[in-house]
Amino acid sequence: NAGVTQTPKFQVLKTGQSMTLQCAQDMNHNSMYWYRQDPGMGLRLIYYSASEGTTDKGEVPNGYNVSRLNKREFSLRLESAAPSQTSVYFCASSHGTSGYNEQFFGPGTRLTVL
Amino acid sequence: DAKTTQPPSMDCAEGRAANLPCNHSTISGNEYVYWYRQIHSQGPQYIIHGLKNNETNEMASLIITEDRKSSTLILPHATLRDTAVYYCIVSHSQGAQKLVFGQGTRLTINP
Image (cartoon, rainbow over all chains, first blue to last red; front, side):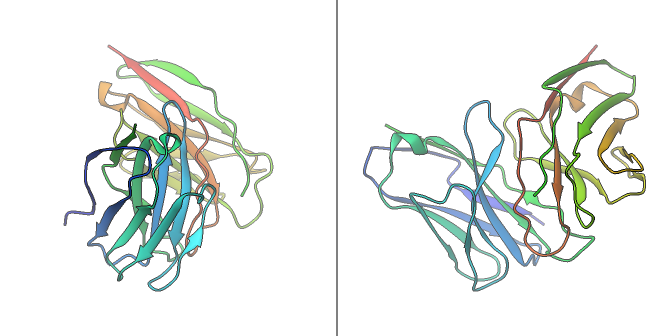
């Protein structure tokens, strides 16, 4: 099993450009998440999807949109990138069942907005 | 979700037990204590979780006080590869979890 995969690994954007970060999991998990991590800080939740067909805002959703394409895939879109969105983005997934609900994280996408 | 308090940094000698404390005085009855760690700039890795009983797995042990207001993560024989930032998080255990990562404890294992 590959677990949680993210593409791309690195990206540099100019202010105002758009891009989509891709995330996929092969563990048949119900829930998926997008976090961002700024230097020296803990992770902050951007959006999450409790199950296929649903999405909800997390702590810092402004400037982002998400799509739960199917059970495996959860994408994060930046419509008009800003320097404040320079960060490392982590995708995660979890089963969603009590007792088996730990989150599994991908390797991250390092995004720089100039 | 309840908030947690952890020391910003700790040191431990290789081969010794590393004991990482966490305070969560506002934890509610149905919330669990979760521990994750982040090695360098990798994605966080789940370690262990518990409700009120002590828990042990192949990575670590979790000791939760009887009043559930604090807990300790124990790495029994720390190695250099255990150098990481450790996050103590309180959350319910069912459905989607909106994990709140604080700043964690930066644990350095010294040779």
